[in-house]
Image 1: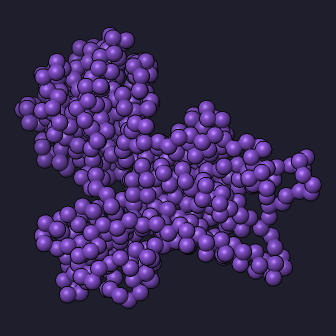
Image 2 (image 1 turned 60 degrees about the vertical axis):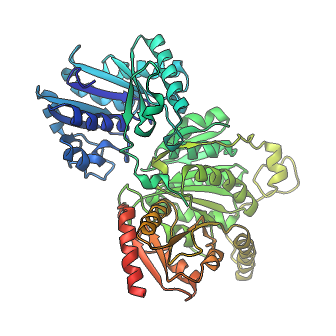
Image 3 (image 1 turned 180 degrees about the vertical axis):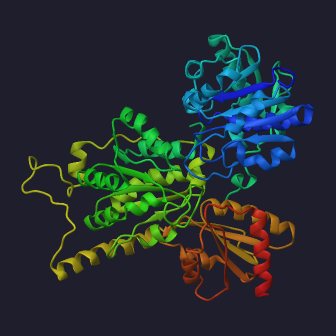
Length: 228
Length: 358
């Protein structure tokens, strides 16, 4: 993904883990490549847990964050996107990740930027999470992908497996998610590219014949895994 | 049963469906919008009825009517929406109609903001309605607990013939966690309504006379007798519904009192303080009314300070002071407006408060 087209748009079912993947990808790119980097938070559905919440950490890592006209400090229900998101899309020297909202409804926002996504110059990734009730069969997941393609007029070019149960995740969940995503690949013809995995579990799932993408749990503050 | 990964609001809606909810009345407001959305497509599949009301006032009064007819009714909203529903809740308390209300709360007052808040504490525990009434309130600290509380709340509402409020802050509604969902209960049948809810408005074809659900009692002595009857129920609720959890109280110098999202932050603050050689513990009220006074009797003799920790300017602190009853100094650590403090901030402020009382 680091060496591919400079524009990556990330879509997926509601709650599939697009934002965690997008933010982890941005941090990984900041470590591995010297190009200018940007992430465009195009999520106009969710009020919480959006990539713009990690703006300070991302910008410290050299990733410019584009989101709403209030520079990520818009706490209202007026879901808007800054016109400035066009800047990294037009900047030929900038690698850009577009983090979209969930489902076809969230992906629809890509329509207004479709001129920046011509065949061959981008990747349109779809995060597939078989642990979510709406995509728990390959047929349902494939239907979601078709809906996203219909809504955006773009073709999904790669699948990212992201089955997990947060702190309860076991290696078996990663294997199960990968097998599931390969079934979606068989239905749709879209290649399964990698399986996401928490950094702490990577050593347990490597060497099983698929690429593993380490996820950093950037969007989940540690206190959310504490309880009384 | 295996766990599934769900967003809080989705899980809360599914919990209501599995509890046998057969009617939901909703009006959109952030951060609970996923609930009416989920109910709109899933409740009809389960045999229930979904209505998008034109306002929160309409939603609560539609629920009032449906519950008066024996329905297992459910409404959800967020803070300013709950303020709009207060008149209806007072009527529902007075008429002894069961209802489950979920408040996925945010910052206030007024329209406020959409980030998490707990400044509805007084609204939910004291009520914004007129007159003498009380409402059991449960505050979950996680999605699994919230699912279980919603599931049980329908039975509590039926038992006490009173609204029951689930007070889950916005973080609970928007976060995702693995959840084990309970078994789905069958929908209540018309015959079951007649036998289990003989007070319900079910028509006159099956018994003599008619049922009337009303809150108007013009004779003072009649109204007083009715309110006293309600308070006999509330006294029973105080005995039966108080719930809490504690951790590390035995040798704690500092005892945090926190519910919902703040209890998770306090659990992490306890770890930070422990690393600095300061012992701290947590009392987590699960029921906010009745407030679990008994939890404070478990505090050990090493405690020097009790700290109410809240996402408000300090509302639970009054109940904490009443429960403490002068035994320890009571401090307050709070943020408001939708600002969620870090566990580091809580630990640092707690250390300063401890130094002040030493």
